[in-house]
Amino acid sequence: MPIVVNSNSSATSASFNLSRANDSLRKSLERLSSGKRINNAGDDAGGMAVAYKLDSRVKRTGAIIQNTQNALSFLQVQDGAMETVGKVVNRMSELRVMAQDVTKNSSDIENYSKEFMELQTQLNQVKQQKFNGISLFAIQGDTLGNGGINGYDEGVYTPSDATAQNYDKYTRTLFTSSSGQEADGSISLNVINLQFVLSIGSLSGVGVGANIDLGGFRNTPGAGGVNIGADGYITSITHVSVGQFTSVLEKIADMRAENGAEQNRVLNSLERLQTNMTNLEAAYGRIMDTDVAIESTRFARHNVLVQASAAMTAQANQLTNVALQLLG
Image 1 (cartoon, helix red, strand yellow):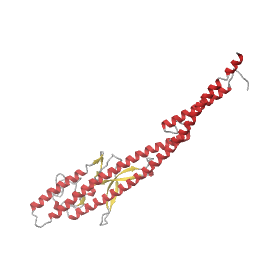
Image 2 (cartoon, one colour; image 1 turned 180 degrees about the vertical axis):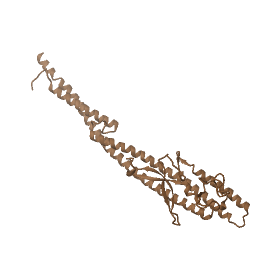
Image 3 (cartoon, rainbow, N blue to C red; image 1 turned 120 degrees about the horizontal axis):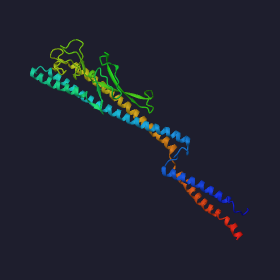
Image 4 (cartoon, rainbow, N blue to C red; image 1 turned 30 degrees about the vertical axis):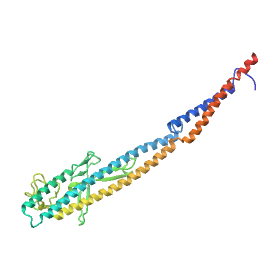
């Protein structure tokens, strides 16, 4: 090998190897410090594109899970309110039976009617209950523009006597897919029509075809003489039969059963979403996360190469000194 002064290929080669080893060491340090295998698009362009879409889907799925949990809370609060309604109507029916006691005088029955009117007031107040500002209940003919309700559909209810009844049915739509499309997954949550549930048909003295309810929602004040008071409440418990109370209790039971079925469906959707979330996060991690054990091994190798390359570069730079010694 000739001894030259103007060029030093050995030093150039050693310097190149030092630069390459140093770049590899820097990448290993970046991966170990960030915990990510891909820190910029240049590390793995295709992998980053896939991971970016997966991350977006993970975030949307997380939002859907939160929405689903809120929907479950909505249904649970609604069921609690319906439980209260059932207790009130049960008490009403109890008062009606006690009013049939032949040993009770008119004063006793009047006292029963006073409690009956107070209970009607309580039922009317249940309609005002909300969950985070969203109504739990509706009444016939409502057009609610909040919380996903834009109106109502025609519902059909068939009680135990098999006589179908039409009523206004309100629903809220819960989307259960990260695509945000109803066709990809959704659940209809019933907003109970409280007026229909508490409707008892006609009262004595009110007239044929009148539709009276126990909550005083849209009863006509003064209808049928003294049977409907100025506040829309039924003035005497004797105007309602035990059978009418039984019919209302049956509707309450059916509505609570529907609520329970919806809760189970929401819980099943929540479980599916959480499973999807876990799998999506795992898929994202397999692409983006660095294997610390493997990367630590690479870091040690690159560190040794950097030190060796630096030492060899220093040695190569000394080769030109041999030529100076010959000239001296």
